[in-house]
Amino acid sequence: MAELAALPITGIVEEDLPGPPPARLRLIAHFASQADAEACRAALAPDATLEALPDLVDWSPEWQSQWTPFPLGKRFYLSPAGLDMPAAPEGRIRLDMYPGLIFGGGDHPTTQLCLLLLEENLVPGDTVLDIGTGTGILAQAAMGLGARQAIACDIDPEAATQARRWHPALPVWAGDTSACRSEAANVVVANLPGGLLIDLVPELTRLLAPAPSRLLLSGCLLDQVPALTAALLGSKAFTGLQWRTQDDWAAVAACRSR
Image (tube, rainbow, N blue to C red; front, side, top):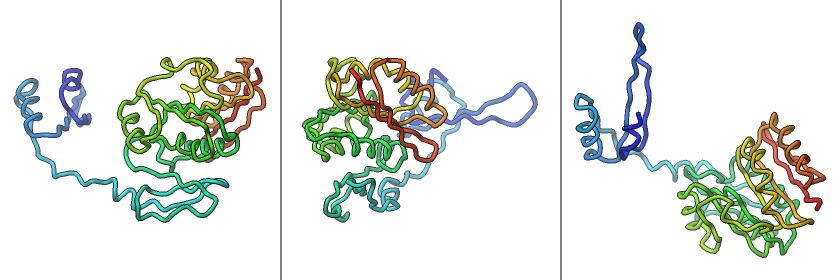
């Protein structure tokens, strides 16, 4: 498996084969070209079978066609990106939804919870830092709400590249928060897995300017709420936690107390 992973594969599928012990396994490796597949077979498995697959359908436009614009909260209007989409109703901020593998298109509850927390907590003139920006939708929303500046980062280089492409005016870097100075923003927003949020509370606190400042976190499951609450209150830096929930997900706005 390690030898396969070092080759230019686009994916690996493992299939358990029926039969008595010992267990047998079939590996199916996908390649972007016939030449790559043949090179792999020559190097690792001369007896392997090659099978040409039909060209994949570009699913992004079809997926996007299933989305319809919708309002969110009091200020936002989420719409599939495209010139043929309707303008946002008067008084609402249009946020573009981009199909693809980059998280943060706007259709997931954790993203929507973050948007609602931004709407409720951002004050015009705030400086916003978006950690794990994905498509950049949260930073886009912050600017629409009147932030003086929004900057963003993502450890996935492809996400950072796409966010820069979709939002050319947005400063985005590929990497983690170690590249960011302390007290960099008075609003820090992060839509990340709950376990990671719990571990990152000290680092996210470092990035926040002194009070009044707000930490907006989304991505934890309901059963992770007690642990995240304990991490935030245990830091002695936050008070007045404001929770929002949707389906099985939760998000919190934590106001810095010092």
